[in-house]
Length: 298
Length: 106
Image (cartoon, rainbow over all chains, first blue to last red; front, side, top):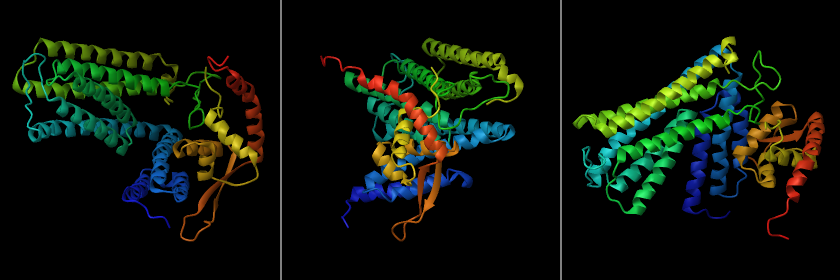
């Protein structure tokens, strides 16, 4: 039997852990396919291959859970939506609960100065602090979201972490020690993330594309009628909830020391406008959809 | 333009492979190796095909003691018929795509 290196043994153990963790993430009635995938993991030649194989289980579990929600009757679906909404908010809130103490801890350990003042641009942090917190925070957000099966929150933080990573790399490359106009940068990243999430949701919800589940037909739909876009608006509402919570936490931190100044007011005004537009779009879409009146939102 | 069900290149690759020996049972890992699809792509495809009645599944006894039973797959009679039709339908467009000349190759 070939000797496995430490790294391979580690990957092997990780694959085993991942598969047993995934077992707990699916309903007992839907485990057949995950059991099938787990059994095949034994055929992999080494630890890395097994880990790669096991990672596919995440996607499979996702699909299984999506299908289970699809097949639930309306009342359960409404409950599932409520639970999913709470999970999304919890995932986002959990991320903030991590990132804020982490920011202070990092500035303490890295002996950096964290100030919330009116130096040009406002809040200034060391790029390493900003970069590490943003990237680790984004990753933590994704993990939290996946653990809570909060798909939206996972997308959200995936996009946020990509934007933050790009921002951090740009700052590090430019050699700027302080982060001027941090607030504005943060806002633009947030906007980029929001747009990214909405776009991803819109693309996923495009009717007629082949998905892992059978095509969904609603009562009252004609042949080839587009599927309900309400889920898209639901996601928009969740984006809004996330943006509001972000703005609230951010403004609370800023207001701890002093009042908001013109710059901050402007950036929150822009944020608020975007939020209102999103809510409005959601409401218009909801009332404009013929499916919403039939009570079979889907 | 909306895509029809079971016409994604990945699904077609799986169908093509299963059609090579339609009455034989196939293992998921072998299918993944032969099609080059990752497990996260392959299993949702197999699951969907099974749901639609194109595929039948069976738990097979493990070849080595101590290992878990393995899930195996093969096309149903109806599935094989539909798969052949589907592959025949998409073959011209796939061929056209393949025949597009590489820029600068002339």
